[in-house]
Length: 378
Image 1 (cartoon, helix red, strand yellow):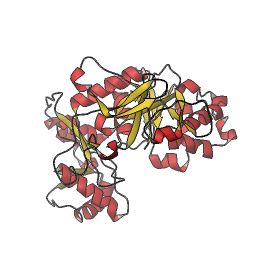
Image 2 (cartoon, one colour; image 1 turned 120 degrees about the horizontal axis):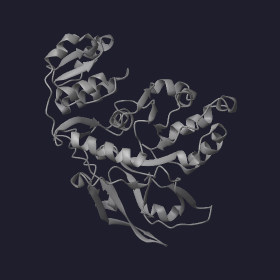
Image 3 (tube, helix red, strand yellow; image 1 turned 45 degrees about the horizontal axis):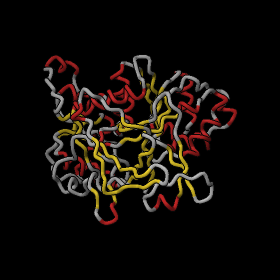
Image 4 (cartoon, rainbow, N blue to C red; image 1 turned 120 degrees about the vertical axis):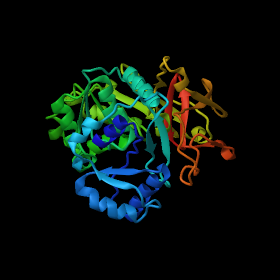
């Protein structure tokens, strides 16, 4: 975070990335990001400086970039700092995807995008200076960086951080931190809630106090109705409330937050016919056999101050017909744009609809029903 905030203060474009692992493929992806973004300086820490220099230069096309250890910079240089006058349309940072299905793809995020998305989240989450976060999410990921750290800074709240490894090794640590710090907000993908259910014993649970956890956001992957129900039931004895669940939908191309359940509302779950859904039709059913549950990811939260930054694309080409409510439509919300025109950038445009079968990128089916948006793999 020191390096990221330093970039913002300096008026230069930040490109947050993870420290690559031992695999050569990890370093190739990082080098591809550096080449694609035309990076001039790599910021790391002194302990990792030599490793980063050796490994990264094996895969870089541009060997001229500098590698700087931020903890070796002389503090006296701060006296030379000159405030930069940043406009809303000025580029703040490039947010790259994980590259799990190919080379990473970057999204251009402006200062206006950041402020707009922060206002959306504050309004949707009902956050203020009393908000207390606990987060183990990686800071190079949009949900960890924008949704947790920057949101807490924006509202003037607190944010307590732990490493992803600390959580994965012992999921109990996450809930212990929420309990001990009386955290009001914490985000995680669906798998994290499942991991807590599998790894935390009743004896451990009964020593927790989750009564202050008002907003348990679930996003970044499909939200499972069964997970919500089991988590609320299992952790009810230590104060967790069903209405604290906050299913949400977001994507890097929308800066982060797109839609979410109202913070004072309970999760909305609908059971639909599975076969009809495979044919892009939403048919509500009360039956158990041949059906599946969809969890609503809520509604977008518009901010009227910047109507030009809240653009919704209604794609009429792919309609999903409902036996009760007629047709729904697919909705995508855009950030400023996607990268520069490099081989990495040209790979796939994330908002393009393929005519063959009306497939969308990213491959997520979003159905609108009763004012809400539910998502699933598909």
